[in-house]
Amino acid sequence: MYDIAIVGLGPAGAALARLLAGKYKVAAVDQKGPARGFEKPCGGLLAPDAQKALARLGLTLPKSLLAEPQIFSVRTIDLAAGLTRWYQRFYLNLDRAKFDQWMIEQIPESATVELDSRCAKIERIEGGFRVHYRRGGEEKQLECRTLVGADGANSIVRRTFFPNKKIRSYVAVQQWFQDQNPNPFYSCVFDNKATDCYSWSICKDGYFIFGGAYPPKDCRRRFEDQKRALESRGFRFGAPVKTEACQVLRPQNWRQFCIGGKGVFLLGEAAGFISPSSLEGVSWALNSAMALAEALDSPEPRRSYSLFTLGMRLRLTAKLLKCPAMYQPALRRLVLRSGLQALDLLDGQEEGE
Image (cartoon, rainbow, N blue to C red):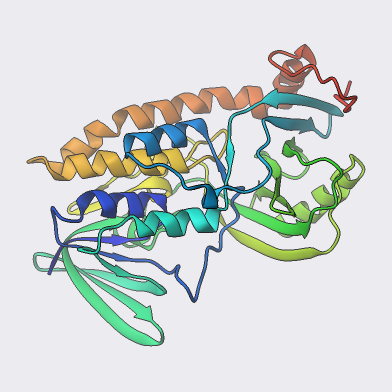
């Protein structure tokens, strides 16, 4: 029996496995692998808070993970108001698939890592848990004393052990195109006709990526309508190279966070740790992994994890207070019209009126 089993090896699960291997007998299961790569709508921008978390972990990024180009501003568009502003930002443009694989490679060999493995069922047994998973058509299982769900928005761990915990969710839809835009850019698009969340675009290694988070009903129609509206603003799409979609969480209040209990712990987006304003999740994933690694070394892990993540939950709740300035149309229009902190462009690019 393993001391700890981790379901999911995104940034949260991989970071935790790296921290725990050697101190505990650790197993981890993830559906990614050579046969099944990264399949999730994600812009692949590493925010400053995520960079800080990597520094705390003692990790430095190899240049092979970086994508081109590195862009230092975000084009912010309010479609209904006809406003565009540019704001300085300090994101790193990454190849997200390579980043996730690199994080897995940081796990010491003492841990058992099962890739290309889809978790099918989890049950509580005497003294712990039994995890059932499929790998290459073969049914396999492992047993553990402590279970960690780091398996994202649609977490099977959360659904199994906390079925009544509901977190507001959207459908993220994203497409990749051959980049035909004359100048590379990032964008953040607000369009209340399509969604009360936001959409994004990113130029990356010769591709133009466009995606957004939409209410589940008619999400694909909303996505396509928004693309047509943006073509009139100079966006160049063409034929999509690939299309991706998944559930994404957007916590609505303090009660929607779910850190676990009774031998089960949740990390990252599985716990609801994702910014409700920007949907940035990597920093929260890494910080929750560090919090749990420390908590598991304490006499009362559940109580310690609750204490160590209190600051995270408070900061995420504070971000809910920021949302009206971004997502309430009249307030957003006021902020954009003010030009507060916007860049004064010198190259003639349109800023909007």
